[in-house]
Image (tube, rainbow, N blue to C red; front, side, top):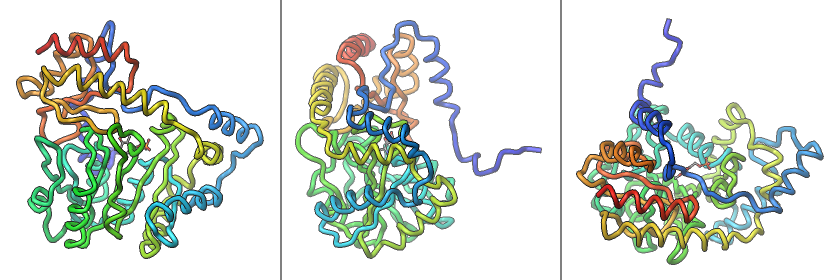
Length: 368
Ligand code: PLP
């Protein structure tokens, strides 16, 4: 008897497994593969979590999350978007939001537009829910244009992912671009899932949200990266009042899956909302400059405007071959095929120490 369900057949993990196996043999690694910040939680947040645990705030919360946290976030969303009565659902990180939103919206065969390259979970979650991934090729500049969207969309298209600043490319969609995408979504009556997990990580101006320009947008945010707490599993979604039924449907699904986001960390997040993380962002600005200035003359890479990744064209055009060579030279990067339908680039995360960045740049350059 094969106990594993057929739905797993659509998840291909063998390529990356081979890379991890090779990585395990590295002697003096520069690890550019990590998708999480290298800083820890703000002190106030840690104290609040400890206090919550010590005072036994360890039971379930209501499914949608603590009322006080939801109200605070709803107030912020109202002010930011001008939405009069938004619905907010606290989720187990942005991953929880992705899981619930796709379960709540995708019927078998529905098209989900995914700008390619993409955050890897989008593809797998769409497939697991029986949807059809409609990849929007954004090479070589990673811009999401109406022309590119038109090529990928059809009458079955229902949902569009927008991720800005983006993983794995580090690009940021400017306001004009977001307005164009909003126009496209409007014409096709799409639901936009706006993944804003890196919104704090911008270096040449602030991130805008498509939610300002299109009313059928679900804003998805997370505390994982900005507060350095990816293991705490805290995020949220917000929708305008006319989409409250969708938030309710997701809450129903949360009740029977995750139940609720971790109680002590919901309390700790309340305490963290006033924290200033600008010092960390300034550090990442410096790291971004180091990477971009260090690689731009030897490699083909687009301007890095946000998040903490670079998506670099692999010399020779075969990313897996280049990554294997890099690993043999003690630099760990990830082949583009993990994030894309093509394998021409590699992803590098600069969420590491300046010393490692300098060492890694030197080693990568020696491979060209
Ligand atoms: N969306 C993007 C673009 C990401 O890069 C990640 C994590 O790397 C997630 C969502 C999931 O984040 P979370 O830790 O909040 O589940």
